[in-house]
Image 1: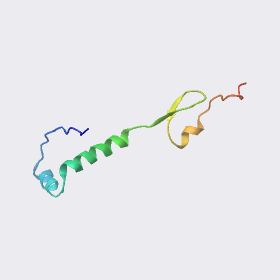
Image 2 (image 1 turned 30 degrees about the horizontal axis):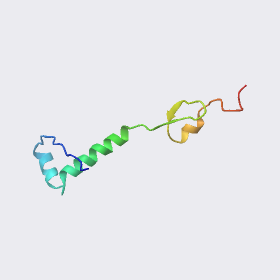
Image 3 (image 1 turned 45 degrees about the horizontal axis):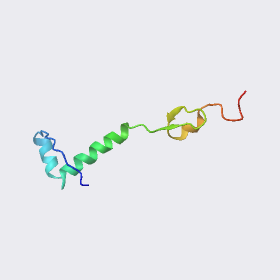
Image 4 (image 1 turned 90 degrees about the horizontal axis):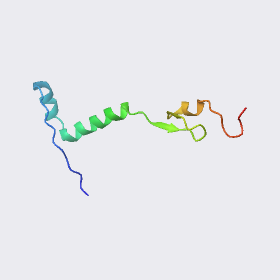
Length: 73
């Protein structure tokens, strides 16, 4: 199934117009910039299989303290 592109109108001043003209595919560049911005703010989380807590993914994920099977006190 083909994706349906949607149109969004934006207004450029003289400076940004000149910069846009230098792009071979301005629309693709704008889409790429928007995805990049989204990816910078998106936080990926993981759920611990022992305590079922939700934590930010990454190296610190394994540093959280939880009671695992066989370690209950």
